[in-house]
Amino acid sequence: MSVKVRFAPSPTGMLHVGNARTALMVWLFARNKGGKFLLRIDDTDQERSKAEYEDAIEESLIWLGLDWDKKANQKDRTALYDAKIEELKSAGRLYACYETPEELGLKRKSQLSRGKPPIYDRGALELSEDEIAKFKAEGRKPHWRFKLEHAPITWNDHIRGEVTFNGGDLSDPVVIRETGLPLYHLCSVIDDIDFGITHVVRGEDHVSNTATHVQMFEALGASAPEFAHNALISDKDGGKLSKRLGSLSILDLRDEEGLEAMAIVSLMARLGTSDPIEVFDNIQPLIDSFDFSKFSRGTPKFDPDEILRLNAKLLHEMDFTDADEKLKALGLNDIDEEFWNAVRPNLERLRDIKDWWNVAKGPVEVTIEDPEFINQAAELLPAAPWSENTWSEWTSAVKENTGRKGKELFMPLRQALTGMDHGPELNQLLLLIGPEKTKERLAHKKAA
Ligand code: GLU
Image: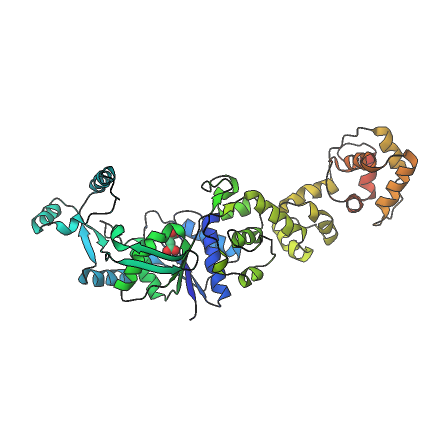
């Protein structure tokens, strides 16, 4: 069987870490199986759907490296939905309901107060022709429900194992609004059949929807696809993803947080699986290692610090050839391989390199706490041209002349040269600063 899957975002908001993880799972599965990945935009709700969100979702997916083989918008497919709705109506699987939201709310309340589950009571099926005529005369427009069979519904979920529902424990889902707008459930099933979707992969918030969908597939003369429902991620403390990086959109993680796509992808692909979380500089190993059986049913916890850790690691291992393009995109055209190699171990985010560039090229604010020592050191500075060994030649001479060693020796030099007490290795940084600026900084001239 050739695999065909879809990722079906509603363009009513940005792509966040949670739904990006679902997109990634769907995509990795497709690529692992040599299958096809469809991007389906669930935009039947034209009031809430916005073109800018659709664009942002596409931009996010592209940036993450998730390409699609085909794209479809539900808003362009209403003729198909209308035809299938007619079929279901003739087969008696859709029925008109006239309750207002307030009436439905009251029914729910009364069921709950009697200790009953709030399942729709199918009151609409009891209406007499007169009552229906009266509602129509009042101008009430019906919404439509799909009539579930009260029979067991079972599927073997790729992540959750065997899942069973009883049709009688579920409310008949509303599939057409009073405005005539067909809703997600039915459109999704019609599309999944029409596009030949073999596996529906989505969040576990859809598990009970799936039970009703299974019957819709059958009512439309199709067999249900296979399903995989992934556990939704929570924040570090088990709460809803809302804090810091977790509540940011993918584009914010790129633009505001300055993170690399592969840091996000690496974490999202492995979170909640039995594989170790490690950073990859390309997506292929993640495709190769993808397997639903590795996913746990437990709630995976998203720790934003982990993304930063992976982001840093990715940069520390990145070759200049890979960094060059990204640096140019940040407007940093003068950084060469020597500078990159010296500074990359100190980067958490790529943009941090600007700070090190300023440290190397100046001007920097330097406060010299021990001028006597620095004066002595300045006099021992080796003559140009400098090499990789200059730092050790210089510090050996300073050590010999002053008797200082270790932190006592290095820290004041670092502070005098950079105005900071941490940073890239000084043997390399010294070369990047160069003899002229080094002399100026040691001569305590401000802003050298
Ligand atoms: N638009 C739905 C959502 O974002 C799609 C769910 C599905 O994959 O069927 O939740």
